[in-house]
Image 1 (cartoon, rainbow, N blue to C red):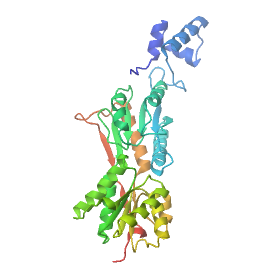
Image 2: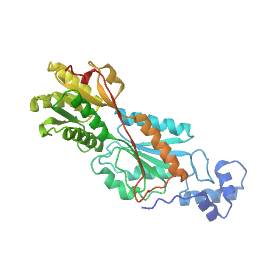
Image 3: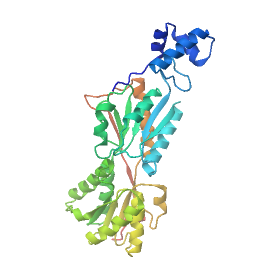
Image 4: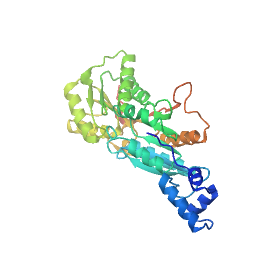
Length: 345
C-alpha cells in the first residue's frame, strides 16, 4: 500500500498555477479570482491533498504535528509516558494527534496510521506495547511509511528508532537486592506472558537467580494481568504452590498492592516472612503498609526522549539505520529501597 502524500506542488501543477496561488486559495491571505479558486479546490478534492489544520508549512511541507499511536492508558507507565511526549512536543512547538488502540494484541494498526498520514504529520511515535506477534505483523507495512517512526517498549527493527526501558536489568536488580538481603527462595508474579516487557522482567529475575546458583522452578511463578486483583490471586497461588518462598518479585506495583492485600489476609508478614519488590514506583508505592521497595522506571523521560529522537529523524540529523540496524535508546531503571524488602537478619 502506497502512502505518497499529495503535495501543494502537485495541486499547483495540475491547476497550472503557482504554489503561492494555491496557498492564497487555501489560506485566504490574498484575493484570487473565483475561476482560479474553484479550479484549485477541485484539484485539491480530486487528488486528496490535505493541508494541515493550521495552514502552516504549505510550502515547506512541515506541519509541526506528531502522530502518536498509544494504548493501555489505564496503566501507570503508558499514561505517564504520554505526559512526557506531550511535554517535550509542546516545548519544541509541536502539536499531537493521538490515536488509541483498544486491543493492541489483535487490532490492525494500518487504518490508524493511515489516518495520521492523511493529517500530514511530520512523524509518528508508536507507543503501543509489544504483545505477542503484533509488531511482527505490522513490520513490513510500517517500514514503508513516508514519515519517520519511533517505537517505544519493543525490540525495534531496521528503519526506525526504538526507545525503551531496560526491563531485563530492572528485574535483575530487584532480584539481586532480595538475594543480598538473605532471601533464598524468590517467587515471581509476572505480567501477561505475551507482553515483551513482562518477558524481559522475568528474564532479569532468572538471570539473577542463575548467577547466584539458585534453581529456577516453574511453581515459583504465577501470572497476573498488571491489575491489583490479579496480584492478590497470584500471591495466594504462590503460597500454595511454593510454600518455602521467602521473597517475591512482582512485575508491577499495582499487582504488588494486590499481593500485599493477600499477605495481610493470610497473616503473612512483609518483610519478616516474605520480602517484596515491585516495579514502576507509582505514587501509591510510598504509602502502602509496609512501604513498597520498587524499581523506578523513567516513564516520563522515555516519552520525552522519543520526541527528541523523532525530531532528530525529521530533521535528518540521525540515520534511520546504523550498520544495518535500528538506532536504539535504552534507559536504565533504578531501585528505590523501602521497608517491604528489608528483612531483619
